[in-house]
Length: 371
Image 1 (tube, one colour):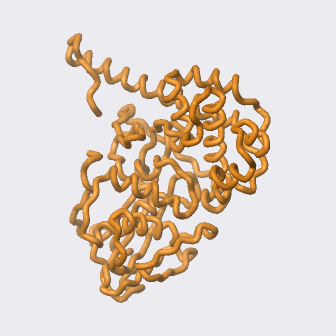
Image 2 (cartoon, one colour):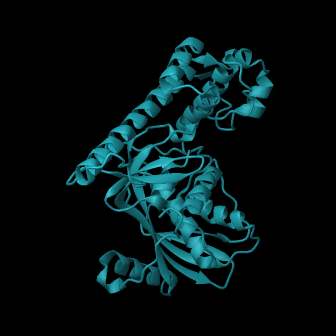
């Protein structure tokens, strides 16, 4: 499924109240009729928190709430964006010179991320214009990935207008990379599940290379997602990116401690892979190499044998350069223990599938299905 293009199907707009309302609002806004609609769902993560950007597997699933965009390609090179929610103002720009301001995570910038990602992937200098009306019912800044769903939706919109094709995996990888245009240093889980999700199953998302495997859940299981109504915009604050940087610094310090070439290491998974040891052993290495007190920038420099200028210019990102201390021990311990929990969960699920297969087949050579 992952190698396939995103699904396309013809629908009768009149039979879908939300589409019909969106069509009417589009006509009111632009004086014309949308030519097609694109949808990308939000997600909830079952297990594997804050480890995808460290290279480890996660198990999310899509939710019914989504981003929906009505689209009309136009002959001009103007990109006009509107939103059904009056809190988000209209935006217009040329389609040929997209600029994204990382200091202002305005709603339309997430659309521009997906748009620019497709443009740069194909190396295009001129793109056709389009009128787009966005309708989202994912609670914003609630941890259900509304921003990534909009990036994914925009990427698919742009691909469709261009008349080009990419697989779901290729789209997920492009959109994960392009969301960084707005300054969010994510790992790819959100975009991957938005494109690779299937009804009735969660997905084991693995990276390098990106792949997704069905995780069948108990029949009749119901997941309740409680919204605390406390909003957290990842791109509007430095909290998320600081955490990513703390994991990156922990990986470098651990690698240096174990005598590895640490310069190019970015993820904690790389350290484990290069050492060739288990997650449990990595937890022991973490206990031995790192201390619980936050590290100052100067101490990190001493650990790595570099200058403060090198730390700031070669390792820290612009939105983390003002941080004075970093929690390396806490981040490494969480990542390795959470990755171990995902692995245990995966083994439990595969074990159940083996048991089920055994009871049906009664054969010694039965193996798990490929998903």
